[in-house]
Length: 396
Ligand SMILES: *Cc1c(COP(=O)(O)O)cnc(C)c1O
Image (cartoon, rainbow, N blue to C red):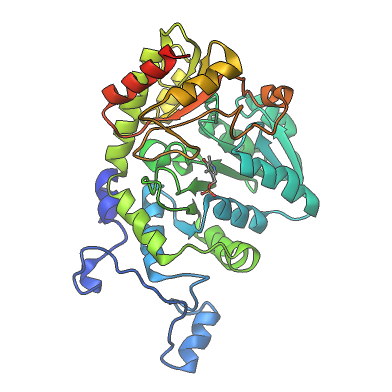
């Protein structure tokens, strides 16, 4: 039944049957660590995986299960595992997939902590990580070998909003070896705008902290894919390797956030497009990076791959580092904060904040120029956001 309903309707209803819960419109928050068995035989069957049912909340919880069913449905995946953070999802999945001697191929630009996990974590345990520019399919092809286990990337990629062709990479990688897992971080788009599984990817990961939760009040993550693999990630990556289990109340809050996901992503996208177009002609702005702009090199691919261009914009200010600092300090409505996907418009200046410990040359290697500013366009009236950006730019 659910599969025939639209995405928006499923984001409100999927995975929950009120008649099973005293008619409660919203899913109950099951605050429990453990579950009582009728008899030893039932307990034994659950432990052996021969009977359905919960055992202990580091493995599963009924509130979490509603969220997982809903997210799997929205991603067009067979199954989903919700976790305590985006990093919890990424690490649980990767620890399940790799062994010493394996290679992970990753895009050259990643979320900072994902980069650190790959570069400083995996390599300690004998896993090789090769960073390539995943917008270059031939470069990905050349990097593939008998040792490749995972190909990992985000799209669009922070901060310059490069867009990576999920279908083309998945096809190329699976032609080479169907056993290699193509893993896509879909945090920036959410399934409302992009569904990597339908484009051939094996696993989708999320920081649910961002748009899925949508209100800046929680930390959580998720990984979706084939049933068997998600089961393995749950019973090894989560249960034994990371323990990064989601709290029941957090799962409830994400379910609440999902009810407005479609509406929010539409609004984030139309506001970001309006702001990007406005900034394009501005004399204080050297470049605007947004895949919804027709002269973006990624516009044709983004139009195919994404339902709308999303809420993230980066811009490069004339005047470098000092301009970035002056712009940030001039903001009155927009909040100076990292993270993204909230109702509030958030702004950060990587050179003085997230990447301040890098040398300028290192920043350049990661496409982070001194005057680069990143905006997560929120749900306020776009006229008010524009006015704040305008007055802050006037003061630069
Ligand atoms: C925030 C973020 C993460 C990490 O998620 P947490 O919930 O903070 O652990 C991973 N990938 C992307 C693209 C992110 O923005």
